[in-house]
Each structure stands twice: as C-alpha cells, then as structure tokens.
Amino acid sequence: MKKIISTLSILIIGLSLFYSCKVSRFIFYNFADITDYTIFPSHPIDRDSLNNPFIYPKATKDFTNQLFADNLHLDLKTFEAKLIENKTVAFLVIQNDSLRYENYFDSYQPESIVASFSMAKSILSILIGCAIDDGLIQSEDETVGTYIPSFNTPNYQNITIKHVLNMTSGLDFNESYFNPFGNAASLYYGCQLEKEILKLQVKTAPGTQFHYSSGDSQILGLVLKSALKGKSIAQYLEEKIWIPMAMEYDASWSIDSQKNQTEKTFCCLNARARDFAKIGSLMLHKGNWNGKQIVSENWVDRSTKFENRDGDVWFYQYQWWINSEKGDYHAEGINGQFIYINPEKNLIIVRLGKRYGDQLNWNSLFTEIANQM
Image (tube, rainbow, N blue to C red; front, side, top):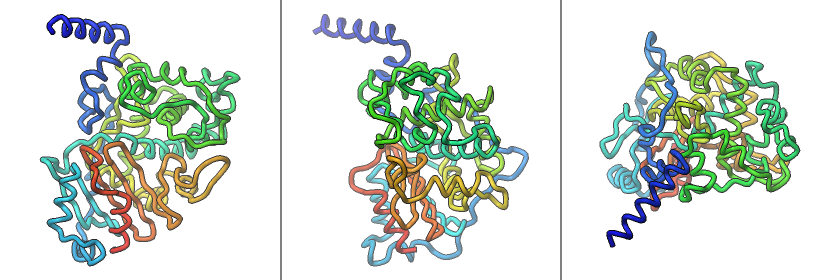
C-alpha cells in the first residue's frame, strides 16, 4: 500500500511539474468555489472612495405580502429554508430601484465577496458596448483577427466579434471543469490563457451553429484587451462602470498569472451582491445610470432581443441568457449565480450560492416571484 501511495505521489508531482500551475491548481482546488478569488492573482477594481456609494433605499411596501401569495404556496420561513437548503448565500429583490428583500445565509453578509463565475460574461458584453461607444472597437462585425493577429489565419479569419458574442464562432470547445486537460478547466486553472485559446480548432463554419463556449468569451476578452492598448480590462471596468455607478465596494478580476496579466473574462469577477445588482439596474435602465449614459441604449437593446439572427439562438444574445419573449433575461454563473432582469416589472433579482442546489429551478422561481409583483 505504501508503495502504491508513493508511486501515486510521484506521478502527481511529476504531472504538476510538467504541466506547471494548471494541473497543480486543479489537483489542489478542484471544484470551482465562490471563494476562488483567494487562490488566483487578480487586478483590483476600486470604487470612488471620495464620494458616497449608491445604496438602494428600502421599499416602504412589504415585499413578503406579495411574494407569499397562494400561487407560491410558501411562507417566509419555508421560503428561506429552501434558499438555505439549496446553498444560497445571498438573495436580493429590487423593484422600482428600491430594495424589497435582502438576506444572507451561511455566515455571509453584504460585504462578503463572491466569485461571479460566468456572470462575468454578461458584464464583459457591456464593456464591449462601451468600447464601441468609445471608438476603441469599430463594430461587432469586425473580425477577431483585427485585434488578435494570431487569428489572421485561414482557419480563424472569418470569425467576427459578433460570432464570439453569440457563441457561434464554430470553435471546438469542451465546457467541462472536471478534466484538468479539458478546455474549460485549462482556462480556469491555467496560467497562459492566450496560449490555451490558440489551441482551439474550428469545428463548424462561423455563424452557423450555437455552442456554449467559455473559449468564445475569453477570445472576446482578448479582443477588448488589445483594443484598450495597455489598459487592463479591470481598469476599464473601474473607469466606465464601477466609479460612475458609485459602487458600494471595491472588486477585483482574477487573472491567469502575474507574468501574463490576462483577465479571465469568461468568469472570475469578484464582487458583492449589491454591486452585482447595480449591473442589473444599469441594464434595466437601458444603459443609463442617474442621467449618465454608461453604455448606449442601442447596445442594451441588441444584447437582449428575443430573436434568431444568422445562426444565433433566441435564448442567448451577446453573452446574456434570454428567458422569454416577454423581455426578461439574466446573467448566470456555475453554482447558481444570477442577475435576473425583468423590465416589465421593473424588477431585479440577485441570487448567489455555494452550489446551484438540486431542489429549485431558479429561473422558474424568478418568474414566479415576478408574476406576484
């Protein structure tokens, strides 16, 4: 037995040395956790410390009286028990720019940092819209190769920014975190994101088939990184969103390594529940925040349309999940991180969790809550 353990230890050490930090990170930290902001290096995102942060006022009308109507078949105690049972750490309901419900569980508090996972994809989309507004990117119809020279090859030359926005690039990407040599795990735990991206092969013609791919979102981040010409994506987020929107807390964006300094834009924005909610408010108000147009209304409209376009699918547009033709949509991350937006009800719901949970369909719950409002 000791010999087997010794052999296994040598194998693990050998693999770790051979594959550098990627496999060693996978071995020690797998599976993805909402505290992963502590294990990766990151770029800081500072709030405006000279001005008072925006804090949602509390609604005067009791939310629970509406929420726990007959259709939900729940009382407050049972509802919160289900949130806890399904590993929820934060749940916020904001309507008409007022906080109607806010609670934290499992020792989490308003100041607790939570990793966004793939909710970052939707926030990245807003930044792409900002970059187009600023003239740093001319159009989403430009090819990726315009900004990433390595994509100026016959295999990649027809992939546009719109293709990676809508995940129709045609690149072969395995969205699995369980295999340390798979694509998603290689991005999440890897230390050389650009090198990992350039390993991807074209499987189908661009613009013909939707395939959910964190690789597409990372390519989108590399496009933005190039367009910013030396400024980090975290700095751009701070400049365009975090400071103008008077976020309550500082944040950070995890990077692959201190050497390469590449933000993991397919995931890994680390912030607090209230500040994630403000991203929802920005979208709800068509890119406007207290009279200042942060991102163009046209970009918000294009990002949240319910339609099929050029091989795209109606339920995924510009890195946002579209819920229905009624106009509601959301950002979503693994482990059940959500920013749900319902323009018809002027409603935002944020749910953050340690795990997705196996007894609640979150989107169904959000819809049910919205129907009660």
